[in-house]
Length: 483
Image 1 (spheres, rainbow, N blue to C red):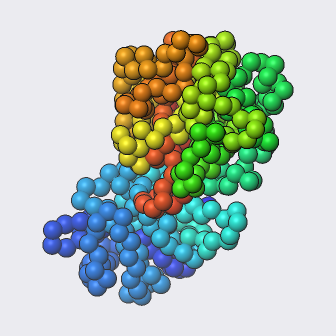
Image 2: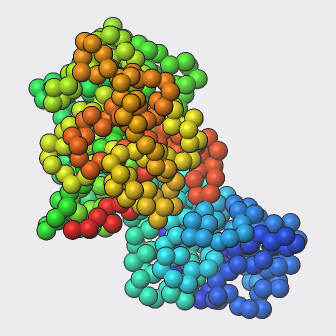
Image 3: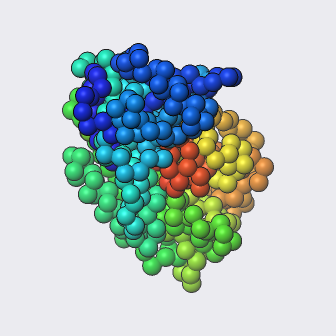
C-alpha cells in the first residue's frame, strides 16, 4: 500500500511526479491546487492542461511532461464542478488507481485542514490497492507526499494516522472478498480471523461444527451441511478498559454460494466468492477499532458457511431450528444468508449489547432497488439514522429503507414459526423483516450490500473487484457512539 506523509512545501530535489487538481468550467478547466504551490506555476500548469486536452471532469486522469516545473511528469486529475471532501477522496484515488510505477508522488491538491488531509490520504491509499495474491501487479505509487500548510499540526497528523488504519482495514476486507473459495472457506477464514485478531490484541473464539450442533445453531449447520467444508461461527472481541457501550457487528460469511439444491444459473455463480463480504467487513472494522483505541466495546460475529449441493444438503421443505428455538421451513436453499445471520443475531443478542449492526450481501432485490453503488439500511429508526449519518460522513453511500409490517405475512407457514422465502415484491424489505425477528427488539440496523460489495468496473478510489464497503461506515458509527 502507498506510504503517505505530509510536507509543508514542495521539495527542491527528487521531483518525480506532481498531482494537480482541475475544476470543470464551461470554457476551460481551472487549476485547483494547494496554496503551497508557487503562484508562478499557475500559467504553466494551465498551458499543460490545455495541451493534453484536460476538461476537469470528475475522475479524469491525464499526464503531461513536467520539465518546465522541474518534474518528470505532471498528473492532472478532474474534480468536477464542485469540490467536496468526497470529491477530493475520489480524485486522489482515481490518480493512484491509474498510475503505475511511480516512486514518489507529490500531491498538490487543496488540503488546508485536517479533514481534507484525511480525505486525500484515504483516497490515495484506497486507489493504490492491487490484488496480488496470485499474480504480481505493477505497483501504483510507492509513496505520496501531501503538501499542506497543516503538515505539522497535531490534527493533520491524527487524520493521517486514522486514514492509514482505516484504509488498511478496507483493503484487508477487499483482499478477502477477492480471494477465491478454494483458498478461503470457513476454516481458513476462521484461521485468518485468529491471526489478525491476535495481532490486534483481540480475543477470538471459533465454534466448529460439533460445538455449533451442541449450541443449537441450526441455521449455520443447515446451510453448511452440503459441503465437505463445515461451517464456523467466529466471535471477535475488543474490550477496552472502562468502555460503557457495547456494539455487536454481525456479518454474513457465505464463502461460496451455489444456491444449494435451489441451484443458481452458472453465470450467477461467477462472483459468488464475494458472498462473505459482510463477514470480511465486520472483522476488519473490529480490528480497526482496536488499532484506533476507540472507547467502545465491539464484538464481531462472523457467520461462515459454504452453500453447496450434495446428498447431505438441506432440501427444500426441510425444517431447521435456529439458536433460541425458532423453527424455519426452508423452501429456497438460495435464501441462505438470512439463516446463518439468524443464528448469529441471536448469539449476539444474548450478550445484551446496546445495538446490533448486521451487514450482508443478502438480496438481489437490493440491486434492483438501489443499483450497484448504493447500499440499503433498514432497522429501528434511531439506529438506522445513525448508520446513514455515519455513511454520509465517511463517503459511503447508504439509503434508509422501511420495514413494512404487512410483508411479514408472506413468511408465515402452517408447519413452522417462519419460512425462509417471502414474497418477490419488496424482497429486500422482506429479508430485513425476517432478520428483525431475531434481533430481539433491540436497537438494530441491517445493511444490505449485495450491489456495492463488488464492482466489475473501477471508479474513483475503487479498483475492480471487492470494494470493502461497510468498513468506513461501521467505523464512523463506532466513533460516534456516545457514553
